[in-house]
Image (cartoon, rainbow, N blue to C red; front, side, top):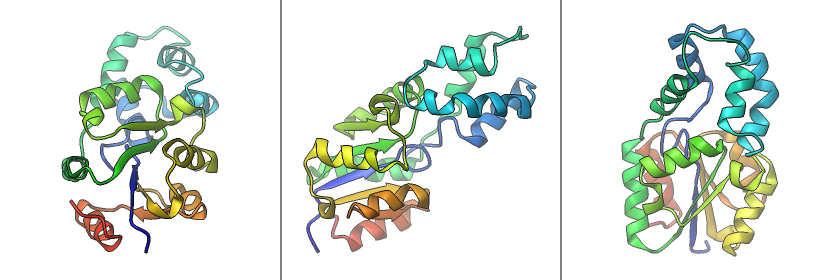
Length: 203
């Protein structure tokens, strides 16, 4: 088996909770007593542009929430959105150990809007772990599109057989595996450690 030289990580659902997935949206909508069906119709129309960095958080909220007067402010809703991000401490600790070991190139491949992505990178110390962020909002491509994985390989100049991609969703792993990358479907931190050890990854 070729020696692993690069580890690519999903962020939401692996290192942290998801940023603005169904659970987070439902929590925020309940907090502000908003109609879920009405919101979801609008969300579906703009989420691709939002996660590809084509529209800002401000524009997204104008189209999904603040298209009519509300009893709360945009700033209050944003604070709620940001507060929903929480660390997966065990996995973050593992990523930190791997980064300190200095044996592997550490990067992310994640779908996230620009403002939430910046917030999470800053507030959870991800710059201390990763040297590259292949985020949908920066590159204009989303998982599971094969182009985002190919771009990550081209930027880092690593052969796919020396790369491992970690995600919590099987669909996101399929395109990476088709390119020849090793793929780990993460369920728990302990299971992730075992899968990495099977690939010869040490820390």
